[in-house]
Length: 426
Image 1 (cartoon, rainbow, N blue to C red):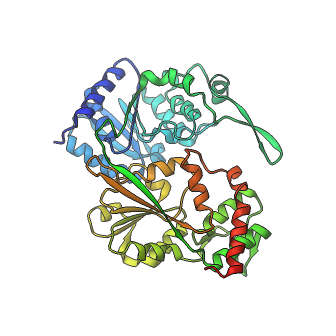
Image 2: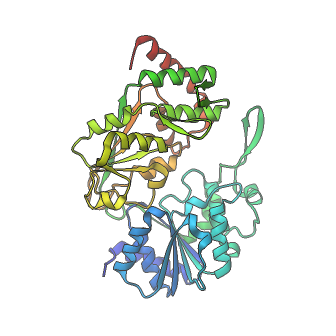
Image 3: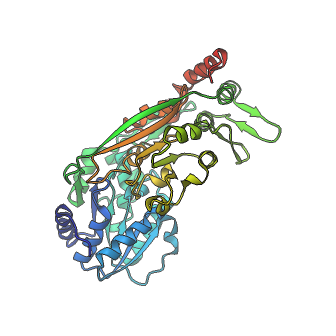
């Protein structure tokens, strides 16, 4: 039977006390501090008989392993968020919501939030929220996380987000395509914290005794001529027509997406089909990290195709195969792998591309961290003159890279690609 660390026992006792008088508790524990095991122990201490653990698909195996090692008396069902609608449990005393910030979308609730609410409404069960970052991009994300609790929500008096926002959001005006719209992303931290703090337990890696650090290094690779030309043509003409396919960038958002794809060597056509334009990044990574065990984060599906083309049988997309040492290289999509998986067996994490999301930046790069690992090295592979480094500088500041950031930078990108072409840089 597995033993909890002292701080995990203390958190479990604190949480049990809160749940004795409340319907929910929010464990804001930083990554790798043991949220899963702690929550499973709490379920025992509150006397749960049937527990539903909702998480990401990739994390199901490790949660089942922790449950088996803990060997509690209650029954446990583990499901990913996409399969919530399939749940048909006759009774449920406790639901554990992993990465709870994922249903904090606003101003309208997401399908994920609605599915969670349906289950809680049906069973009137207690809930344990788990997240290292309860409001990673905006404090306004807290409303629908609480909304799923129904009458138990600290904001139950507000029947929808818009009514809540009048009191808890500093509503600003934002101009998009000559129209002004309300920007609801500026939740008022102090007012929101005052309502949820008694349900919130925070714990950091430092408090847990972690002494590890994450060092980041940017590796810059030359932009191939074919990529440079396509980027330049697309910025100038907004459309590239081939014999069978079309690359269309008739809006600022589409142009941003297409340049994001091209700068890492792939493209998604207007038809939905995708193609590898150049596997230059994959070849660079293969040569630069030869002899190392690496986990590669990619953004687009065609990037995985490029990785598999360059690495052959020496790369896997199966986490267990990588963790068990049966393959030296592992590839996973950024959003899929940023939460709930442990990559501590890797020598390094290598980012083939970068996501627009600040959440992805902070969570994905910390996947190797453990209490006993002192130093982690993360590499970002960026194209010289490309869009990736511009995204990086924004998400580092805990902001998402948006169309407004892009509009102020893509002219510089066009200039750089033009310089590459005229000087013969490859």
